[in-house]
Image 1 (tube, rainbow, N blue to C red):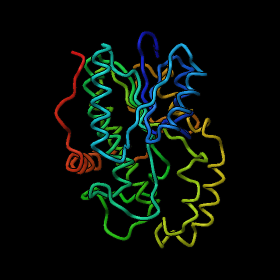
Image 2: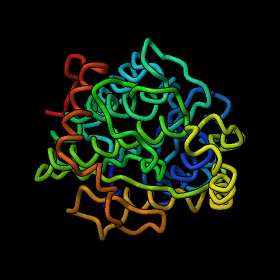
Image 3: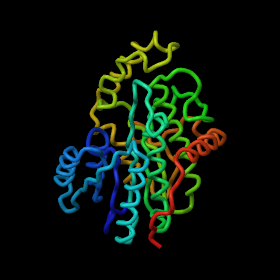
Image 4: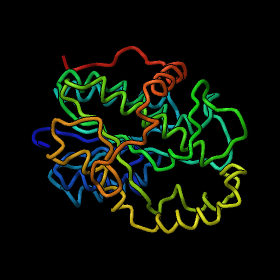
Length: 305
């Protein structure tokens, strides 16, 4: 894609792991990269590495706790206002944020995994859409996960019936976001804005370190087999984050994807078939109703018109 002018990329959870490697890849592609995270020290170190890759276009850190929907709104407002002043939308938005919780807890009265893995990136994306659609360009990349196969496909409520199991709840939130991603691509088809999902596959990250050793993150039906499944998963997550970032980088920058949308870029950085349940219009409609109930959109942000 063309990275000329004031083209900017925003990468959430971009101060370490896959997010930072994504940011470095986008910087190497010529984009001016803004990373979002909670920790200013990590942010400063990330910006230093970005600047070493692309000194002509200095990186930037924006602090936001993306588990807070109020802070997501504030972040979106700041980005939209800046882009309106610059006369251009972000060229790329990579929703890289993700988290798995071994024990259930709420954020603002809503189960945490659903907030972090779906509601937060949904809200940021929707609030920034006017800045994309007004100019009719840009790419939105939502990071997905193979854990979608372990999800309960019920979305009448934030949580399905039964006990809390972190791995399944993480997969369910990621399934909701994948369904949203494909639905969004259909909504924006013809606008010039492309929407992709990117599956990083396995990588050793802070999120997987230690969490998978707790057998209670999976349902009793899977628990007896979990040591075997976990060992296979951990072997697959032994690769570097730089490799896992490739699907997001390709989705965000590959010229061969120009004019295309609604694709899942798999762990080998090539388009793959999406997980079939995520393509079901009934599931997408259920996700949409649930999402709009728990993350209502605020007043429209500044656009570029």
